[in-house]
Image 1 (cartoon, rainbow, N blue to C red):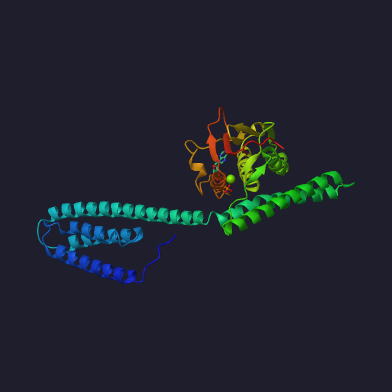
Image 2 (cartoon, rainbow, N blue to C red):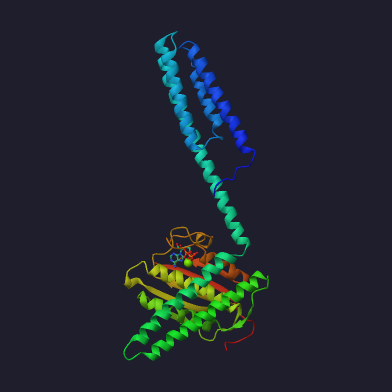
Length: 356
Ligand SMILES: Nc1ncnc2c1ncn2[C@@H]1O[C@H](COP(=O)(O)OP(=O)(O)OP(=O)(O)O)[C@@H](O)[C@H]1O
Ligand SMILES: [Mg+2]
């Protein structure tokens, strides 16, 4: 993000530049008019320091070069005093000018980087304050839409067979309907969010929600040769949260796990999906055999725009965290016993209700 110039800034900048040119001319005249032994040229460093906040790094390089050139020019024009002392003074001044110019450039680059970081912080907080509405819509709708396209293509292939495989085609159509439902659920939820309505919390069967998402991911898992195992605890109480939102989080975690194992050999492409009860919470956990998280990134991965993927936006986990916390739960990355990554979240169980 570029800095917006205020209307008064160009005038002030013009004044600074004029003062700089005058100071350079004055120093040059004094340096040339005085004896070799008087090291006036070292004061060019003061001009460089004074301009460090005005010029960008390219301007500072030009200024440093000009100061050095003027120092040398004065040396050749001056005609009085001890020439050897003058030569030594000129070398010392040149080194001082170059070092000052280098340090000023570095300070300017650091200032620009700090400015950029502040701008991106502002951008992030603005997006956060919209509760991820825009990014979140694009991100969340992407998954069911991509799944609809995949199932549509599969359906076309089953129908094109001779004779057509109607059973498989019907299954693909069912997946399309399921995905379309999910997409319209997301739109309905976003509409509620934009109207400021709360998430629609209701009791639902946790394992069914998990199975639905897994069914939608099945085709992609087959395509990527992923061996998935589901270990869903029987007899869990009902979950108490917004089921569409919870499915969105499950989909995000499963998708990340699939993307992670796609990076390793087929032999290590394993996924373990679990559901279990921990006191008054229900827990979903997915463990994968992928490359695992970068060292020390266990917390960072939940920050917005933190991504290691070329195509990634880095919002999947941060949106998941907002959703889970809004539903009274908690999301975390565990340290896996062996290789790979483990992600889990908890949501409240409905008090005193058994699984339907
Ligand atoms: N199962 C996993 N194994 C290894 N690294 C993971 C896993 N899940 C997440 N990560 C790391 O966390 C980062 C952030 O994940 P997140 O889902 O927020 O964004 P993303 O997947 O990069 O992009 P997108 O916004 O499309 O989801 C990933 O880029 C990846 O480095
Ligand atoms: Mg992701």
